[in-house]
Length: 199
Image 1 (cartoon, rainbow, N blue to C red):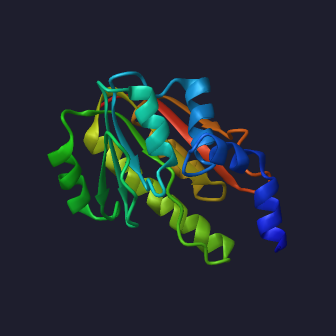
Image 2: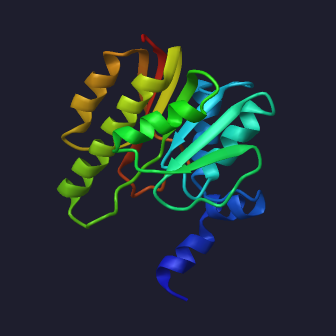
């Protein structure tokens, strides 16, 4: 057994995800964000960008319930989840916004993004690519959110992160950075929590 696989097997959140039938350990990051910041409510319309393999979709669906609506977007084919709509699309394309507008029943209450770029091994390049994805998710949030809506996105900490934080602060009344306990210790990722979209 490889060292990577052994560590994964020993990972508490990996084991818990298997036990609770979540598709990824990342589900616990959203649960922890929700517990601290209450970004989702029953009956909400939720857009999940970079949704594969579906852990955040599962959590979102549980929270919003039968009266809510959840749609996910990813370049990868995502296995169906009951009560969830999934689009195979690229969040960097303007056409994706139009496709989302066509399926949403009304303006979104929350836009979530747990996107990561394909990791190249070059930290500067990976961080820049990740911020680029975050900027695209922010643009989508600004197009789809209702006034006072919420937005959550992953950010790699680095030189571009402060400018992105300032950009988001210009559109939301509450903006915080949060590192969920489920985040791996060596990871440089952090989540930007933004509430009360100004429209």
